[in-house]
Length: 342
Ligand SMILES: NC(=O)c1ccc[n+]([C@@H]2O[C@H](COP(=O)([O-])OP(=O)(O)OC[C@H]3O[C@@H](n4cnc5c(N)ncnc54)[C@H](OP(=O)(O)O)[C@@H]3O)[C@@H](O)[C@H]2O)c1
Image (cartoon, rainbow, N blue to C red):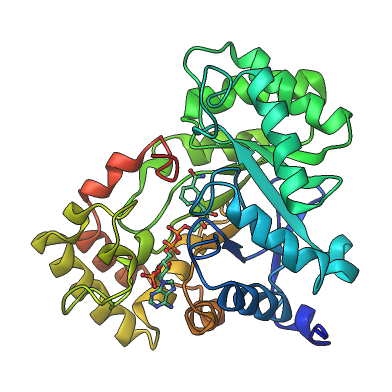
């Protein structure tokens, strides 16, 4: 039987989502990959439970996480129903709808029809009455923003979600969404964009909008899917994300990117951190960033990432050096769309 660590809240620090009442752990765990039916359930369970023991209260899902799509929610539901049943009120569970989930015109994007049907399916898969945060996973250029936002609001009013968020919306799309949600008095607490040393599109207006609107920011893929670790410096290890067909585009392993990663690693070593730890500290250095949303394939990776919280401070000299190696990366192609639905 699982017994949660008694000191879990001493092991983590928490930050407020913008000007809301909701706090999130500075490091959150995403279940996009390695938690579906194709992965080891026992390994996934170990990652979730040890994370909770370390004070990670926030677990991020989406309708399409797996593979196959939906199976990460099913597996997480199993863990919730058994090990974490007594801790539901200590957890922030999020899910999203936006990418392709079922065939036909109501299985993706931003219509009310799709969003609310998808949320019902997610709740069923996870065995939950409500999620803590329900997101529009991507901006839909063809659906009026009012319709998408009113659907998010309906999720809250009907008791299926406590808060709402948006993901990968650009600055102007975010401003428009915030205006509608403010008028509706919907608790809009969080934006989820990609952000890392190699992918800085959010610094081009989005973070300013979020600060003005009082909305939090949870940065996804802060390790650039593993590129901002040392794992690819000497080739592609078996079973790594880059070794599989899927989200990790091989162009990310260009000679130039790897040269930059190697130089960034030297800076990290001088700081007494691993490259992964420096990458997380770098994302978290900005007050606008509520949480860094990591993925993992083993608990040992999460454990190493958590130690980043011991040093979040950078000297001006370090920041300048990092900028030398971490600009003009072709990873900016991730903005402003997400990558997990492709
Ligand atoms: N909203 C969206 O559109 C969107 C899009 C993408 C992701 N997300 C969310 O963000 C979460 C995180 O995304 P991500 O998985 O791309 O994040 P990430 O943290 O940038 O990459 C995670 C990968 O990095 C490697 N890694 C992690 N810690 C490591 C360590 N200490 N040492 C060496 N390697 C390490 C692992 O790769 P290996 O698997 O190769 O071991 C792991 O799977 C997702 O689960 C999801 O919740 C959202």
